[in-house]
Length: 227
Image (cartoon, rainbow, N blue to C red):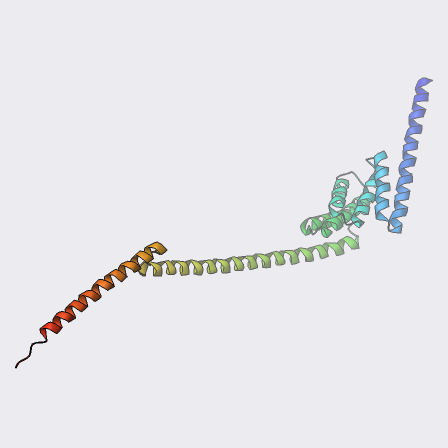
């Protein structure tokens, strides 16, 4: 009798949890339809707190955070769901949403792989077919842009190197010209300049005295006349 009672209590507990989970899922769906993705996310997370393995809860949470432009988390959620054992239709939808998340995150190669997986599970999904071609186009544009950016980078580096080479050549030329020029005299101090000026004055005085003596001597010598 006790065992039966215990089993009954367990079943009632499971039913109660399931009811709460479904209530949060329904409320989340209602918020989602209103465009209130933030509150929808909260309700889906509450449902997952009660049942972490809920495929519906995870799928809807991934869709809600995708609408909130949280593409990294939505991609992670759908990638995890892609590893679960699901029916082909459900699996196709999971990979379709995974492709959308990766596409918005500009991970075009991975999004292409996801859309291919979506079509393997649901070959008639026209949205996945369209998105696959769109992802291929975006990948091609991305590769062309990367190639152009690399070419621009290489060209800029080449120009910078040529400019640096010109500067180095000019610097070497300037150094060679400086070596050919006679060394400039060192600057002298004010005291040394005054001493040199004083010495020049003294020399000039002596020179003038010597000139005067020579003139006097020449006058004396030139005074003789032939009478």
